[in-house]
Image 1 (cartoon, one colour):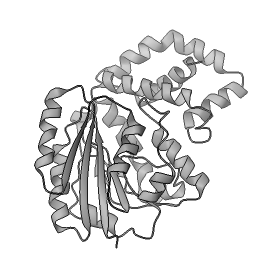
Image 2: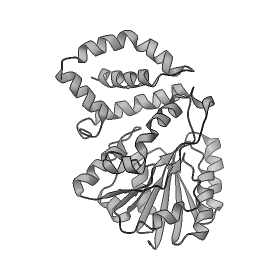
Image 3: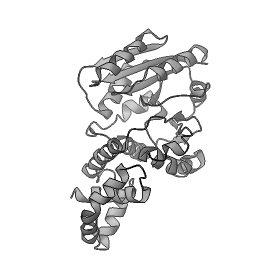
Image 4: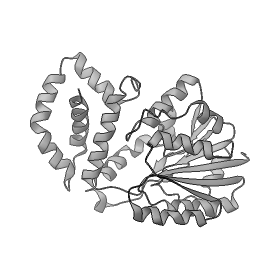
Length: 294
């Protein structure tokens, strides 16, 4: 059993008060000492900022406001330096927790270097099938069970919900060259493997229950793909899109694929932005958009 946990929550234009309130209540009954630090990374939404300021009134909680956005990696590194405990739990600010034993479950992982708890989705029913993000995440869920994740522990790791020894996060800070959205967690997992640290996958999920509209999700996906292309050398072997792009190149099919994609791109985008988005077309769009970065 660990003696203390610092729960660190980076947030940007996300309402994180509910998450902090849930964790604050759990901290009262937790079997270890708990601090909760929420850092706003220069949010542009002043209404959400104001609502998040209430976090400072909660027991066990601190709320930090940064004047300018420093990026996803830098805010995580900053939060680590402000924490006081030997163990760190990171949770994304747009997640929620519905498990009363969430903190205690992590507190039992005292023999591990890194523990990843995973995430789950609410049952959105048929009404959510028009939402591309929900549909995409729902399709991926069977691959995110503990058993599946454990088979390839370093490649199926995300910073949305994990615990690590503070000394590891100081030894391997998040690469601050990853400024825009995406893949800083994938690269961190790769460095963990290279350094010989072990990741244990456990069943201690947060709830992913906020889904942006289709056009916003596509914009975020495009930003992530630009990040992936910019760091393709560092992420070699840790991305299916990179592997697929390399395979197409080896078969001299890249030019033919792009010619077809360019002709159909607007049609594909109208579909995935619409009310009946195709996951197959979304997959094609991601590969095409990545290849166009060249």
